Structure formats: C-alpha cells, structure tokens
Image (cartoon, rainbow, N blue to C red; front, side):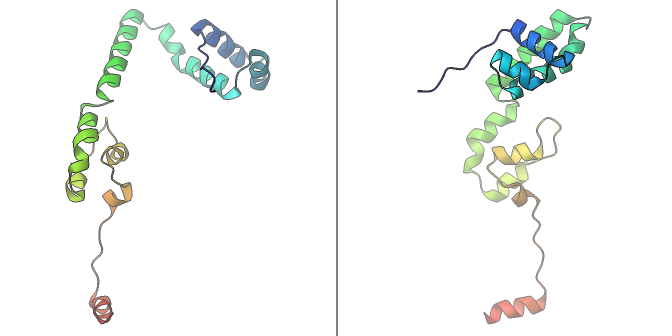
Length: 142
C-alpha cells in the first residue's frame, strides 16, 4: 500500500530552509534530523531565496491576491486559452494543418505548441531537400 503524502506547514518549511541557508548544518544533516529528502530541502531553500524580495514589496496584499487569481485561472484554462483548443480539437487535423498552427509566441513556446499538437519538433523544423537528377535516376532504376 502506498504512503500518503506528508504536508508540511509553511512555518516548518521556512524554518528548515532558513537553517539550510545559514549553513550551520549541511543539507544532508538537516534532512536526516527532520526526516526529509535533501532535494526537498534544496527546493524549499530555492523558493525562499527567490521569494524573499516579495516580503518587502509595497503592495503585498495586492500581489498575493493577483498571484492566487492567476494561479486559479491557469489551473482552469490550462496555462493559456489556446491550450484547451490544442488538447481537444487538434488531434483530428492533418499533419500539414497542425504545422501551420504553430506560431512564434512569447507566452507559449514552440516546443509546448508541438507537444500539445502531438507533433514531433523535428517534424515542425524539417524542410525537405530536393533530389538531384542523378539520385532520381538511381531511384527509378530500383
């Protein structure tokens, strides 16, 4: 039977991440003491460092509300409005049609668009090379 995931409080995560940042103990020592995996501690440490500037921002309450609203929206629509379309409708289109749908976009990378369209990236970038007359003659003989 599988184990249930442990949920840690934000206070506990902050305490462990701060201890890792201080460097008084190594990450493996902290992991052993708290019964965690070192990767988890490094992840919490990285999150704490990245989000430390937000603690001192002027509009803390507005930023938190906006972030949670965006996160909720992304969960509902799937990161981008086109993602839902790609996932549901694009499978029925031909290969040529799917290749034409991919465009340069700052919000949705070409790699992600290829994934959503079930299209290999190499297929998107491939440009056929014309055969010269010698090769055509050889192929006709075969």
